[in-house]
Image: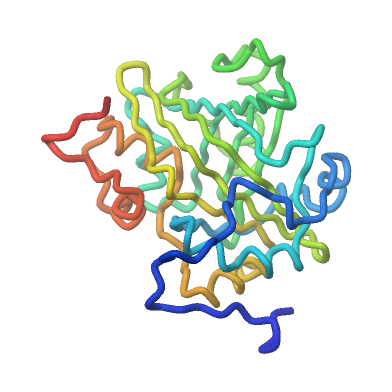
Amino acid sequence: MITQANAIQYNPQGDGGDTALPDVSQGGDFRAIGLARLNETASMLVRRDNKYVVHQHRLAPAWPELARQFDMLEIDGKRDFRYDTCYFDDPAHTSYFDHHRGRRQRCKIRMRNYVDAQLCFAEIKLKGKRGQTEKQRIACAPDQYGRLDPQTEARIRAAYRDLYARELTQTLEPIVSMRYRRMTLVAKEGGERMTIDRSMVFMDGTGTYRVGEELVIVETKSGNANGIADKILRALHQHPTNSASKYCVSLAALRKVSKYNKLLPALRKLDAVPTRDTPPT
């Protein structure tokens, strides 16, 4: 619990200045937790999520309190891992527009390659009852990354059918890929999880969009969307960023969609609002 004694001190006038702030790419202040222990304590396959787009110097004051409350995933001495992710949708971008319209029953389908760990999973994220996110994972060979074989696709469609009692009718093809580095924090008590993504690059085969190195996307994953990490961030006057889905933001940043009003808060924070004069590289 965050008490007055250990509450984070926040200076609303401060902009970093000459103060040496910890680099969020380093996790030395945290006690390490291994992958097996992480999976035991915080699988969080059914959870409520909040996403925050945060400047690194705004997150840095939270570091000491986060280190008191959370452990950090470490594998082979590393705490900062490269993730490659490919999202699947149909040419009409049905999954994107279901999210943009706030459809209650919606899904995102992706394949994630944990490059450092040499692991690969296909995943379907389903919006369940009471706004919870349910995720199912299917192990794949790393060389399968970016391709859904018939067996994997059948299991994805079965997961959709089991939750919604109807078929997933859209076709599935790779639409956009992204690369970033992630640190994963797990609460010492309660199973809550927090991830910090940085060095984000979005790609679609014809263009690339690079998010500024000073920006991170923080995601908190808890049972009620008001966990320890949310309270720590709120003490720093940081609040959830609406519609900060990396899949949806990437499509807008790469100009693959023309309707993105709901994403504007996230796009502005990421400096990724499409403009006619600035095409993706």
